[in-house]
Image (cartoon, rainbow, N blue to C red; front, side, top):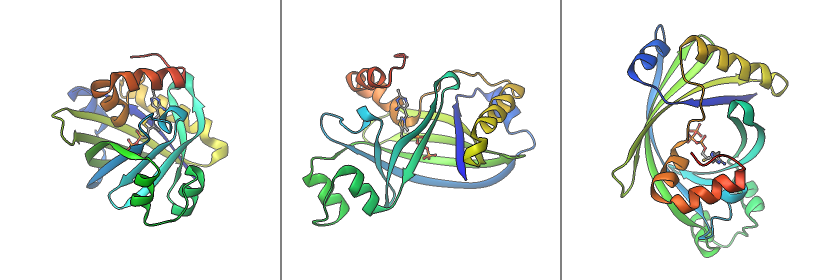
Length: 200
Ligand code: V4E
């Protein structure tokens, strides 16, 4: 099974409509530390390396549906596999090996997430704060679990559901890209160029 997800920015009326009849699932808080080289060689090839609380994760591109702004990534959590993808030999622990190889933290953020279920859809509402910065960010994600062969239908179902709820169908920035846009605009522009997407 794979997860198809789409991000939205909500005003209060949209949030109320979206959560009408929703079951509250859980609340959790987690902290992500994103790593890259000082040239941002990972993110410029769309590789996203982070430590979420105690777990290292590497997101790599799997499939892009640019028309609907839906992007699918593989999420690698096996340390051996992450090391293989980064050509990172085992010398010490992951953190010190990353540091030695020139991968340094470039963004640390904490997310307070409330999850809801509406029919077959999972809805995450994220409130994000950034370490050493006074910016915050709020966004929503609508997610659907599906088989690989039904990914396209799942995308259609999310879009249909979002339309029913009166949500705006634009490209909504994730929390890291939002940070880059605000705090590291040169890196943000280089990322958009590398992805062939419009600088918003
Ligand atoms: C894939 C990706 C990034 C990594 C973070 O992914 P995201 O889904 O935003 O993480 P999160 O924490 O919100 O979701 P969770 O894992 O908790 O479900 S950051 C940006 N991208 C894709 C991307 C890109 N390559 N270029 C541009 C201009 N925008 C977005």
